[in-house]
Structures are given as C-alpha cells and as structure tokens.
Image 1 (cartoon, helix red, strand yellow):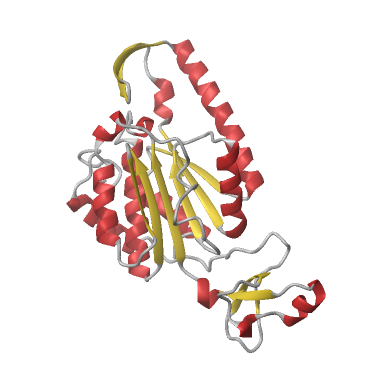
Image 2 (cartoon, helix red, strand yellow):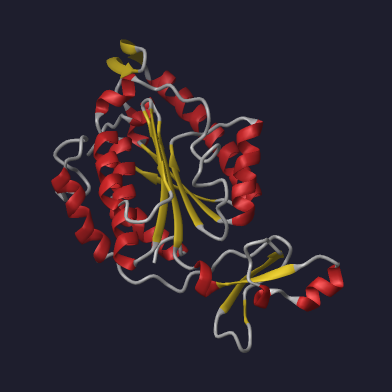
Length: 303
C-alpha cells in the first residue's frame, strides 16, 4: 500500500516529510488560476500599456504607487482608487492548520490529524518548489505557531513533525479559531488562504473575522472526515481525548444518530461558508493527500 495513503505510523518523521517533496513536485501542472475579484463587481482585465493583469480595483492605501491610481474611478466616486495587478500579487498563500484533540483519531490507514499534516507538508514543499510566498499558522494541543517570513520551510516541517505526535490530543486548550487574531491573516489581501480544520462551529466574532478574510482573499476550506467511524460494529470501545481514556458503548442506533447529527451540523456549516464566499470541500480519510493537493491545484490555490 502507498506510504502516502497509509504511513507506518500516524506520528510522522523527517523521512516521511522529506518524501512529500517528491509527490509535491509531480502533482502536475495547474490551470491558469482565477484570481480574487472584489465583491463590488470589478473583474480582472488586461490593462493596455502595463503588460500586467489587473486583479482588483480598491480604495487607495498609503503604500500604493501613484502610477496605479485609476483617475477615472477616482473622479467618478470622489475617492482615490488603485488598480492591483497580478504581477505584484501572484503566488501568495496562507496556510491555516487547526488540529483539535478529536483529529487525532482514525479507523483506517492513519489519523485525520496525520492526513492534514501530510497535506500541509505537500503545500509547503510545492510552495517552495514554485518560488511562492507561504505564510502559515498551526494550532495543535497547546501550541500556536505562526510565521509570515520567507525561508521558513525547515521550521515549518519541524513543527509539522511535532504536530503529528498523538500526545497532543491530551492537551487541547484553545478557544478561538485559527483564522482570527493572527499576524498572518490580519492584513492578508489578494491571497489564497487554505484552512484545514475539523472545526464545524464558531461564534459571531469568529464569523466576522472569517467574513473579512473571505472579502479580501480567496479562501479554501478543506475538511477531512473518517466516514467509517459511523459504521463501527456494536460493542464497547475505549476512546482517549483531552479528558483521558474512557469506555464507550456503541450500538447501531447510537451510530445512526451520531451520523445524522454530524451531517446536519455539517450542512449548516457548508451553507454558512457558501454565504461567505468560502470554497469548501470534504474528503474521506481513505483518500490520499496527493488527491487533495491536486484538488487545490485545480482550484488555483496551488501552482
């Protein structure tokens, strides 16, 4: 069986993370990405004379070049507007990975947390190989690691290795979402933001932060589930979480009810994400991280 689909251990080592570089290199070629367009109805267009593709028209900011001010729109609206071009903003990516204690679980192949970490590794290697800019934030256990600097691949891979350790499921102490209160999302603009989490609910403050993020960026939400968890044979099982180990009685009826409740909540989440303009895709644990990476490639989130 493929070492990517079913690694020897859910706890990944340096060799496995290094192997991801090979898979990242041969993901294939990405289609021409459809870049972010503002909600005001403006669309990207080829501006004569610039030799660059316009992505967005937005209000002037102090750091903008004067030569990119759109004087016609400025005169019409009474407010200075700037044209943002593809050459200045291509290939900028934000990776947000949040692993709850429940993600350190799996009935086949590996843990959900491991699959997320493999995908994060593929994204990191692909970004490095393509010369893309990658900012990231990882939250797992009691850890919260973030960087918006260049040349952080070795550090990121080390943090992914640490995040794969099952011991982190015993130490879950976060209250806010991975996309809120972060240096990597505070000023994100015209970037591809990839959120990977098993989170299905959030509060009003977190939703406002997600709305702002989706307004100025293309946000991709990747969810990984273990559908086999709803098909366990009736019996008594031992589960471990942040509260420790406990025995759980499982019956066919309880499994059906859990499945109904999960997918009802999932439907609500998908509807919310759609209303915010967030692209959501759910994958099963039986699907390889390579397949998920190719989906992101097809969506333009990777190059």
